[in-house]
View 1 (cartoon, protein in one colour):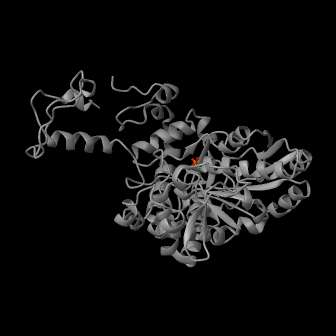
View 2: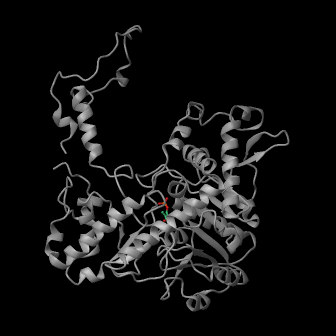
View 3: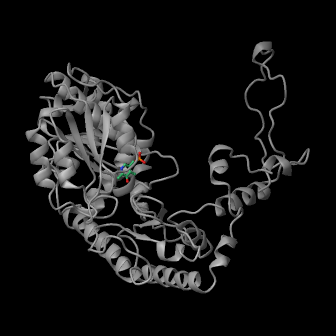
Length: 480
Ligand SMILES: *Cc1c(COP(=O)(O)O)cnc(C)c1O
């Protein structure tokens, strides 16, 4: 699309300034003066409105249509929570308003919200304490693994590696490596869960932790997870739960009861903040009591006078990980969402997420290879390998879906499935939307049989068509 600067016509205006009602400055210091005029477009108001409206129409969001991007939980988030978070009493709170001792009376409401949210997340996951400071899932993972490292250091345990199944999210091995551990990858077995024999072979006294996503990215819940926790603990390792996609088990199963010592959640997936768009996010971390002393500072405490305040005095803490206690607006939305739904509502979230995923899986498995055919939880993986024999690959089906007004699923992940298409409908979609998606996917499977070549022409309806994907990520100048 043309840049707004190119639409500029000298002298054209879109705004009128009010008359100057302060004295004109006599002389400004030369060094503060511009050397050149600011490069601003001279355009009329309707030109500005049309420019940005048209730009926004090139975007795709959950507010546009179905967005079954596996592992990302692109669900509809109620506008109610946005209203709560934009309440003036919260938005006009200065981030440096006092949060200590007597001064904390100015920030009681905000501190109470965060404290209550940490309590609610502890209850939901069966952990003993939470910090809501990390600003993303991967940031939560890093915080969690740093807690694990601090724990082992304090116990003088010499630990070297972290065990991660090959279906794990890419951030898991990246986090373990950044925290200074080597990564040992465990293959999946035919049921799509971590190979238990290989796990037992690799688990030893050097194992710092086992990082599990359960259900994993294939939507499969590991039925032996308690046994795995037990074995890990016996070897002196801790259990890490990647709970980015908690809406598979919300209100049903608590990671704390399965033997996990550390968990991170993605509020910007499960708890009413949209995922994607580059943030803001929130990846709170919950721990069992042995790890509480290591949590990042500050901590929120309730004093004897029943006041909330920030506490910076934790000698064993891993230190600061976020400015201003993380992304407060995301916490507000999560807290409002949890209060709005209540216990029964949270249970309904996971029941509907799982029902919707199984409904889609059942219908699509007649037309697409389904490598792990048992029932799934919140998401599942199908493969375009049957279509690929005709030359139609997962990426081609993804591009065709764009022309149908539907966001493609996650493709080529997890890496263990060839031509993977990872589909997560989420709990917020109606049966009509799911049926429409099934109809589109079935038609595309038929088209792949009858006219495979046509797929290379998709997408036709987008501002840009097939891109060089590496260049699109690394060289984003598309003005030409
Ligand atoms: C999304 C996701 C993450 C990472 O979360 P970010 O906020 O994108 O850093 C980690 N693990 C799993 C399973 C996820 O789905």
